[in-house]
Image (cartoon, rainbow over all chains, first blue to last red):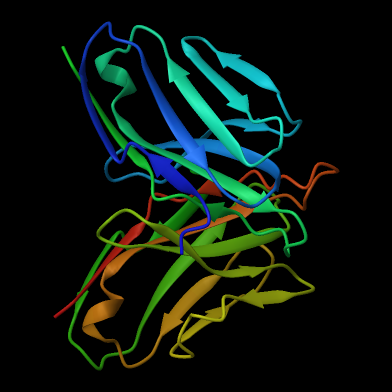
Length: 112
Length: 116
C-alpha cells in the first residue's frame, strides 16, 4: 500500500486556470515537503510544512498542512506553462528513521 | 558548480553485468541517499548513509550496495544486473535533520539505467 496518496495523478489545464493537488495519508507525519521535478532533472524542493494547519505561500503557490498532519494540499492560482512538471509530496513519518517517503506524484501540464 | 553531481547520466548495459553509478556532493552535507524512480515516476528510497549509519530499505536486493569513500561521495554498485533494474537512479544529500525532523534533500539530475 502506498503511504502517501496523491491526486489527481494527471492534470491538464489551460493557462490562467486554478488548480489544487492533494496529498493524503492515514499516517501522521512530522513534516511534509513538496517538490517539483522537470524532465531529465531531479526533484527540487518547493516548501516544507511542519505545523498542523500551517499555510505557506510561494508566489502563486499556496501550500497547506492538515490540522492532523496527515494530509497536505498545493493550490496554484492562474497557472502558467512554466508550472508544468511533476509535483511530488514527501513526508517524514512520525516514529520512523527519518527518511523521506514520496508520493507517486501529480503530473501537471499547463497549455498556453 | 553543481551541488549534487552523478555520473553517468545514461547507462545502457546487458543483463548479468556489474555497473557503478558515482555521486558527489559539494554542499558539506552529512547524509547521502540513493533513490530509484521507476517508469511510473515513483521515487523509492534505497539507502541513506552518513558516517555513522547505513540504513537500507529492506526491499532492496543485496545485488545493490552503496560504497562511500568519504563524506562527499556515495557510489552505487549493482551486481548481476536484471531487466527490472532499468530505472532512473537519483542521488541526494541533506544536512542532518533539524529540530523539526525535516530532511531537506538536494537531488542530482539522475542516472538513467537501461538493462537489455
